[in-house]
Length: 358
Image (cartoon, rainbow, N blue to C red; front, side, top):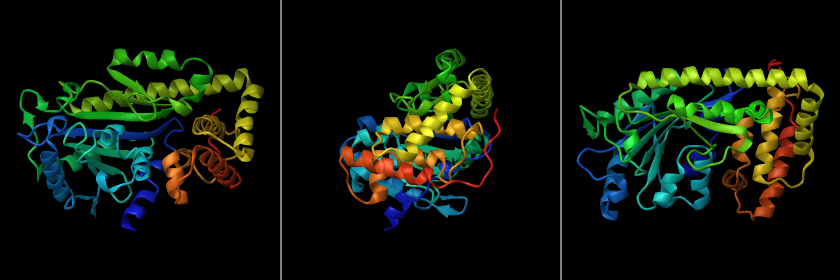
């Protein structure tokens, strides 16, 4: 029952803020390895199991803001349960693919997660809603300090923290923002804007990181360089670039409204109408329509609904959809239940004011 409660919980990052309608979440991940031990990809099965047991034992005594972490071993989770964790951005695809002795420790509200035996022995993560990189880093740093008091991390004065992937050596930090850019996509500017980021030392990936697609006009932007830079420098740089991306998206929305108001209103109302009335919805169609619907709400064109974008986004994914209904579904049944989910959500109007972005 405890595991069920943990997995069903509404993750903290899914609470939308008024900080900005563009930045959905801020995340900081820290890669850490135990000193004098092989990296996970060359561990024997017995060694990996011992390391998981050792780290899991330590994690049970770690507290985040006076709350203990709960540890879940992946070997004890069903495929759907693993998928739920992935869809909520609490674990990575790499943790699932690794197979063997892996697990994750979660804070009660999911704002903190510690993956065990992914690419590195530990991957510490803090994930918060909105544009809050500095706060996210501060909490990640506190979690790192708490773990370093109890574990000896692999560290060299000249290099920094040692990691399985050379690009993570140094701070071992990946700071990222999840951003929603529908107007830049609709006005064919998104590749131009995001294409310049590699020259600024940043990487652009899809909604679930490396190798994933940018469904729903959602992108993850993160730092590429960790060696020779401080954690604070990485955060400040990403904050500055994020502000520029947000400004470009808001300018694109304003331009769409001024230049083609009727066409824009037709597009967002069609998306709302489909979500309100569809009897079958694939994951890809649902995410696209939901993205357009969110833009309509943010621009004050559509009335808001009670259930927020990020919650609907996650709960419409295959794993979460089945887990919330407590039964396995074939693809056709998932499309049917997903459509039902959106019909019910779109009928529940919110009384809050829409954001005035245009």
